[in-house]
Amino acid sequence: MSAIDDPHPPVRVTPYQDGPYLLRGPFELVDQDGNVIEAGRRTIALCRCGRSQTRPFGDGTHKLVGFAAPSGAERRR
Image (cartoon, rainbow, N blue to C red; front, side, top):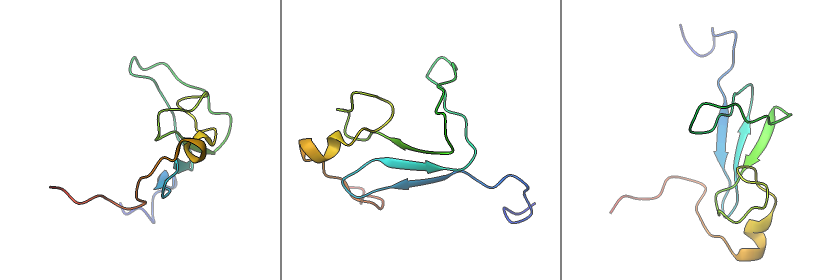
């Protein structure tokens, strides 16, 4: 079955340059023990800088701390 034929569209994860990961679509977010973390919406921002006060969700702190990361994949060394 292709993704086009699947009645459940895949979750889309978009890493934003110098910002969070945006998750769009139906998803379930769980902690390392399998406990569900309620997101309350179908689109969320996940912190990449580690400084958010609402982790694992982003709160815009990446702008204040000067977080830098590419949108695409980084090259392996």
